[in-house]
Length: 251
Image 1 (cartoon, helix red, strand yellow):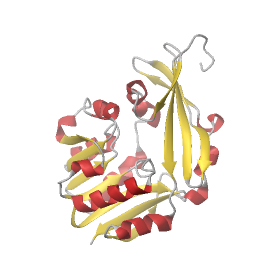
Image 2 (cartoon, rainbow, N blue to C red):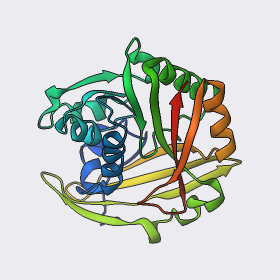
Image 3 (tube, rainbow, N blue to C red):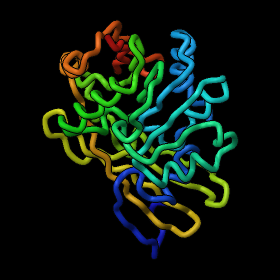
């Protein structure tokens, strides 16, 4: 499939291209056990209102709304929000086009950042502004829960076509091939491509992402500087031993 003749090829920023975003859920899989973990954390802390920062195509936001939470979901990708807002029960979520500061003023019991959302905020200033805005959005005692990969595990070393390639069947598009390919590593900043090839017309779209692999201690310091107390750093059930799950409380 990837060697089709006469196909077009273009490079875009991750989550910016509507065609790629439209097949995101199919490539990620429908079960999303990683998100069910966060739905359980919301129940664990009896959070009635939740802010989902970097909500993407809205899978977690809708999951939480269906379990009775008041949900605000924000994402800077208009393409992702277009997909989210077309899903069943989407009217039960308050969708915001933007980042954490764009949701203010708001008061919620818990804020979540799942998948790559926290690591995609690569600039220190942007991360500090995000954490500060989340602190402002939480009620006293509210929790900020997010995940970030442990840099010591060097996850990027396995980001090759051979180890990550998948082919899925997508309605309308037919078979879609995708994989992850490392581009560069500069300190704790990692750049990679996610090529997606559409069998229907042979188009290849390379979506480029930049992730920041912050250390456990630097994340803790950034939270404490913003007024959080880090209560726990849990293991991620779907990536045991490879990821931090921070549970921070507004004090």
